[in-house]
Length: 169
Image 1 (cartoon, one colour):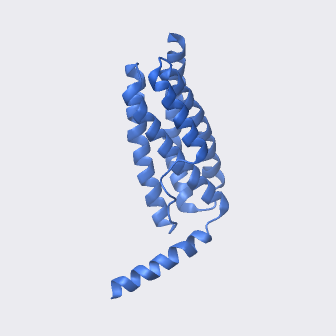
Image 2 (image 1 turned 60 degrees about the vertical axis):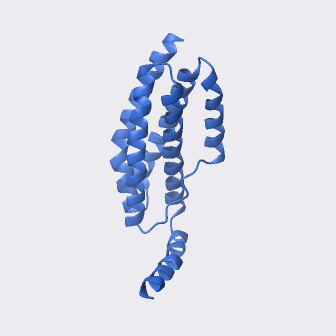
């Protein structure tokens, strides 16, 4: 009976806590969650359809690193007592994913994939830098600060890979 009562109390408390989350934090969390899902999903496509071994190696690292990042974000949210958003793509990212899937039947997949990864990492690094500097929720700010060097490294990797892929096409 106590377990049921505790579950009910916790279930009622989490939405109340989520309502108190600053909009800057909510936006950051939503963006980070969607970004991780997009990186993982598109990289899984790359493992199946990329021609270049370098692209496949990069894709596997994106899957590994962004899976770990998603777990660390969930831990930071639990510590901050913030309910994580659903693990799904928003409309914009779902459309980008669908567009990338079109390239799986053509030779342009590697170029399309690295182009999307470049744009995604430029956007993500900017958002993480901003939140690490200005985020109002300490646990989420610590997550952003911790992840920033890895994301900056990803950005450098994808810049180099994108140039390499572009020069071959």
